[in-house]
Image 1 (cartoon, one colour):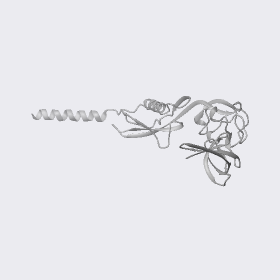
Image 2: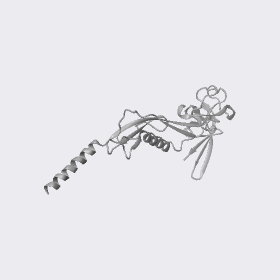
Image 3: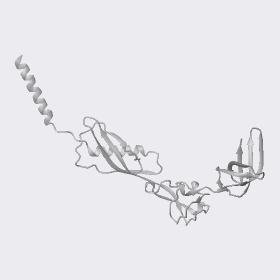
Image 4: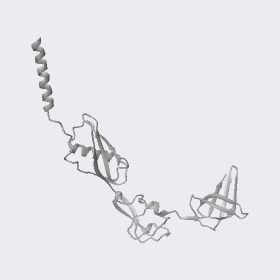
Length: 232
């Protein structure tokens, strides 16, 4: 019995020594980079155009223990667009976390000026052209459809070949300050129209104030053709 107990402890000691001497399995860096690429492709699904993901190198000096189920996440403020950062965290068997740089490029069509465009000038389709490029490298809010720009005007002048931005477009005014407009008031079972004078400017669908010939000031929705709709 004593010999059996001694033999058991001897085997236990040998097993512990073998485990202590066993080499630590390190995380495959190529597998991590592949996981980051797949993660960003899923995050960028649905973006217009052709998406290309490039994952940066991982510092070779990092000795990361192998992780069976690494968790990937976008760092605060990051998104799958342009230069970005993806976090990778492991909780078992060893806890560690790293951040990997990556770039998401989106090759897509965007709208640019075919000729110099003046501020306030109504835009025509013949004055525009479609170009292709990495839209993540362009300013935010780039116009990607000519229909978004035709009939509107620019808040600033643009030289030829410059991309158009949505925040630089203004809808055409359908009501001008001082203009004589037709106010149409409608409600349950009635519809009345009268003349009034616009107090301000307004584009299609904007609220504008008008003053009736009797001096009453009212608000309505501007419509094309010098109409102002008032609903009750």
